[in-house]
Image (cartoon, rainbow, N blue to C red; front, side):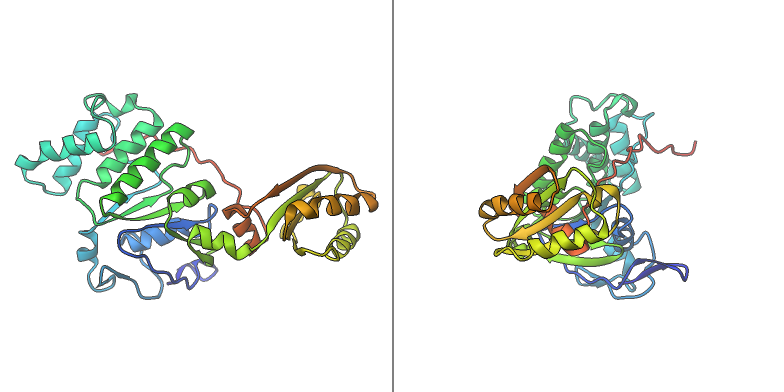
Length: 328
């Protein structure tokens, strides 16, 4: 699949992946990587430039309405009307989906219970916290009983407890058989929720597999060394060359973007990291550099991203939109 915005901007560059029925599929990457563009194409909100997309056996180009009938979508922006109560918001969504009047009350009550908002059902959404609004928005995405639920960065901007609440609801829905496509910029979220995932960076998928498989592919411990002073190019080349001579060190990751902080750090991958640490410290000391901090860790998704892109994924917190005003 390809999506271009004009001749000079390729937002999604020939990506290909599959999602299995009944799984939580994670689409992980930084802001601007192409996650939201991809999800908007899959939910029929944006036209692709080229490529073939099949969802539940239906061709997106030929059966757009059929695909829409089986999808639920919660975007990054919270789409609740703050002038309405939680119950009124969900009743409005039921009208949009033309649910029979006899079924509306039961549906609304069930959704409120699902997302833990029964006690707040008759309060205006304007009085809700950010986490409560997110949960109400999630409930709205479930009105149509979707077989596939698309969640575009559902926990961005939430506090840790609200984020955990959303995780719990996502896992509950999945345990009931719903397929979930989740975009996120949080490594922890992808590791916790996703059965399988793809990592996208600058419009291209750079890695895919289960979280466990991706971490195993690194096949080494990671030792992050933070120096007191920045290294110039000659010092960095000398340090890397000498450190690579230590038995057990497999790779030293070069920084893609040369900043002061980058030049003060070395990312070292090797076997039996605990045995390597003393030798690394002695070597760096012999070169006349001072270590401010040294961290030894088993491979994580952060390390996977670093391995495939040459840089760390920096999460940019986005203020969640508090609501969407509907015309009156």
